[in-house]
Image (cartoon, rainbow over all chains, first blue to last red; front, side, top):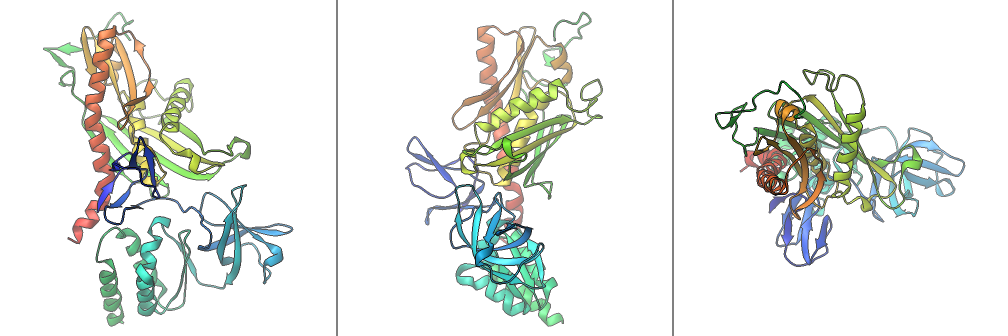
Length: 201
Length: 246
C-alpha cells in the first residue's frame, strides 16, 4: 500500500485497471491514489464520480420540463428522469434517491426507480470516499445507523441524506470517515467515537 | 533584455545577485489542497513568487457551443494581482501578456490531461499570482500541475516548469525578476518528467547551439528537485493523517 502520483509506473506489464493507463507495455497511474500490489487495484484518493449502471444516487430536482425532470447529481453530467415513469409529482427542490439506468450518448445520466425523500439533511462528501463510508459488506454504514439511530442514504455521487436520530453525530462521523478514509483501523475508531458520545448523553 | 544601456552587474564574484550559484534554484515550497471550494488547488512559494492555482471541473461546458463532443475542453486563466509586482507588471486585468501565458499553459495541460474521458465538459484552471519575482509562468505551471493532481482528474504525468537563461557567457537556471529583465537570454521550459517530452519552450534573446544544450540539461537536472517537491506536497496531507494513527 503506497501513495502513487499521476505518471508513476505501477506495473511493468500491461494490466487493465481503473484509474490507470497503459503505454509501451507498462501500466501507469493516472490519478493520485493508493496502489494495492496484491489485489492489483488503484484506489483514488480524490476524484469525481463517473456514472455506472445500477448505482444508487441522491439528487436534487433543478428543472421541470414537459416530459422529464432534470436532476443535479454533483457530477460533470446532469441527470434526467422521464416523467412518464415517475410515480409522484415532483417539483423543483425535491430530493430524490434513484438508480442509474445508463449514461446516454448525449452524456446525460438517465435515472430510474426514483423515490422522493421527505425532510432530512444533505451533506456533500468526496465521491472517492463513498466506498469507505459504506464499508466492506456495509459494516461502516450499519455501525453508523446503530450508533446514531439515523436513517442514512449514501449516494455513489457523493451525496449523503440523513434523517432522524442524532444528525449532528452522524454528520461528524461521516466527515471524519471522509478525512481519514485512507488509514487503517477506521471502523474501530468510529465505533469508539460513537460509543463515547452515546455514553455522555 | 540586454537592450538597456544602464545594465546592472548581474554576476559579482562568480555568484548571482541573490548569492546563488549558476545552477541553483530558489527555495520552493508547495502546499496542496489549500482552497476548500475548488475541486483541486495548490499554493506555491518559489523564491519571492507567491502563487495560487485552482482547478474546477470537469463540469458542463458553458456556453454550450464551446464544448467538444469527443473530449473535455481545457480553459486556463493566468492573472497577476494588481499589487503583485513593483513595476507596471500586472497593473490591470487581462492584458496581452496574461492572454499569452494562459494560452501556453493551456497547451501544456492539454498534453497531459486524459481529456477523452470527459466528453462535452470543461476543466477550468486558474493561476493567480499574488506576488511576483520573475519566472511566474514556470511557477504557475508547476503549481497548476499539483492542483490538477489534487482534483483527481486523470493525467498521464505531472509536468514541471522552470526557466533557464544566460548572463554574459554563463548559462543559469531559474531567473528572478532583475535577471529576467537584463539577461542575454530567458528560456522557460515545461517538461513531462516520465517521458521527457517538452511541453513548453519559449525564448527571449539568443543562445548558441551549445548553450541551448547546456540549458536543457540544467532544466532537466533542476526538474528532478522540482518534481520531488511536487510529489512530497501531494503526499504530505495524507501522510500527516496516517502518521497520527500509527
